[in-house]
Length: 115
Length: 110
Image 1 (cartoon, each protein chain N blue to C red):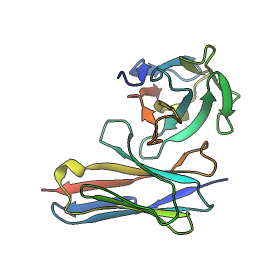
Image 2 (cartoon, chains in turn green, brown; image 1 turned 90 degrees about the vertical axis):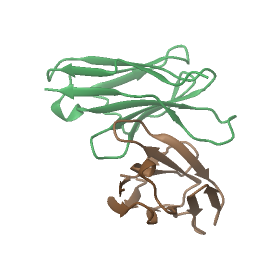
Image 3 (tube, rainbow over the protein chains, first blue to last red; image 1 turned 90 degrees about the horizontal axis):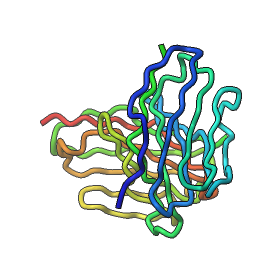
């Protein structure tokens, strides 16, 4: 079974530039999550999708961050404009309630450096 | 809002010693999950606990969910160098909003 795919793996941009990340979840997983993990901290939920609908985006800085999952499969997360404090690893995860163990499967993440 | 606190932040042990990390929530949780993240890697799901007082074992790892469903622990018996990494708990109040703790970073000296 293929895992959660994310690209790019690394990205370096200057502050005030824009950037986009892509995620392809495990096939059949209806729920998709974007997490931000700052170095030395635990992952922080940015947004959760159920199919193509948003379930929770309470911690998404909506003035600069946006995310979509138009067809209920792939998702993109965008930052515009980026700030220095956005430097982090952006993790995508997916899950399915029909899979009994209940855990999330994470992708390898995109490491963003804002200079 | 919901917060999940983990202690200790760091733990350094000699190989063969035991290790325990604790997770506490300010609110009652519907479930709690544990993840392991190796240095440079991504979080990998270990286990989910749902029932009050639940205890689950995976080889040398023992997971507990408190009676009040507000705390949890992960205990590793006789640590090995392969146990190195950061262990995260993540709790949810309604099976949706999974919030992660800050993690406990375990280092093991051979």
